[in-house]
Length: 474
Ligand code: NAD
Image (cartoon, rainbow, N blue to C red; front, side, top):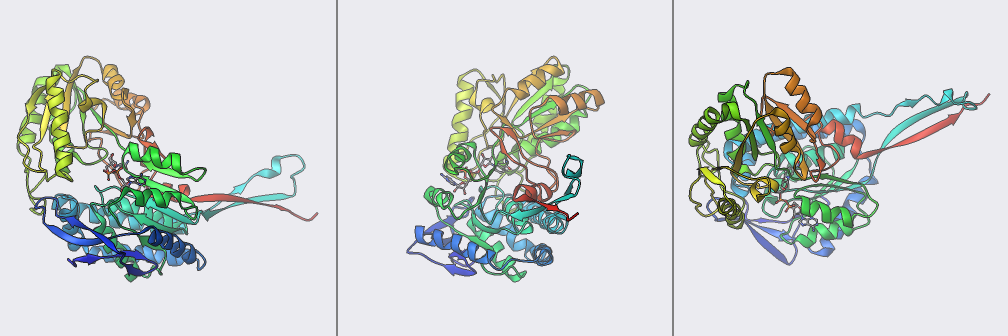
């Protein structure tokens, strides 16, 4: 891996006076020195995107570039997966899956470019409009600012870049400070795929000021943010009247009913609560279990957790790697200690080693404890017995968040009840809250955000309709 990386602006690599070090999240060794973009460079990035828009890409060009990027991702897959394993601490097997999913996201984006269309509006039914024809066209907003989190350095970036370009927008991307290398590599791959200069600009830096300064730039016409609710709130307040799409956090509830396949539920929930150290926005966090099967499920879950491999993310066998930083790991352990102090009991736990936190399962947890009420974003879950299915739904809904939920049951009536009553953007039956296919509408309610991703849906969010009304002669 090269040791120095600049921001990618207008097709050029740009270095400023300052830089910062990106580290391997398991070993701590330095991976690269990355440019800390100055205020001047940020302004140049927005100007480069504006300049690109003056040379629009045809729909067919957008389609071809996105398809070609998907192909090239395949050629670079192992390098991209290793980059993510190192800079994000993501277990290699998950990183490989992320590259394959990134290809899907690109292919759906290419399709969205080709199929995006307006419609005819039946205005002739209005008295006096007998001779009028109304059509809508979808137009790009212009410069899209994409701000992304550390945990999916490739696929969540593509969920913004793909639909933005499909709709004819140019992008300024600000990746998370911990994981800029994957995004910088993607920019080079997209240039090789034929994306002309200025259509994707990647600005790097460790300072939170960078995101704030970009949001403040009036040249940005739409902001698409994925990250924490706290930062999403700040961005929305600073965005003024411009559209803002927000994909934020969750403390995902998962319900296991007495009729469910308990072995399946235990295996899947263990993987999805602790895989990638729980650092997924839809990671399993609150597990509500029918009291009738609480003990056997608890045993099955404990045994499934015991089979998870904890350690170096570069080892293809690893399920649970490090957290993104030692501070994050210390914070997670302190939340567990607080819960234990407030009466919770540890079913499974272990010592922290640096940034690696051992999978932790708590019971006797109360809704008021932080491990239940907030987003833990760590390998930490709570187990709660319930007497009635409705009670589990009420508890699941007692959350400031509403992204996705999982329900294990084979009863059709309960599956539909859950889908109708859970206040979330997605209800997953017989799988965990963390299931996501890249073409489904994905997003939340409440503090989990505004808008939907999935290329076919995001391209609508990132374009606006203009209606044209023709008053036909005669
Ligand atoms: P974060 O909110 O700390 O940072 C996200 C991005 O915002 C980073 O690029 C960061 O540099 C930038 N940022 C920070 N302060 C800013 C400001 N004032 N103005 C503009 N930008 C600013 O999130 P994180 O720790 O990188 O990621 C974890 C969070 O992301 C979790 O809450 C997780 O649930 C959420 N997430 C949500 C989804 C989803 O699709 N809903 C997916 C992945 C992660």
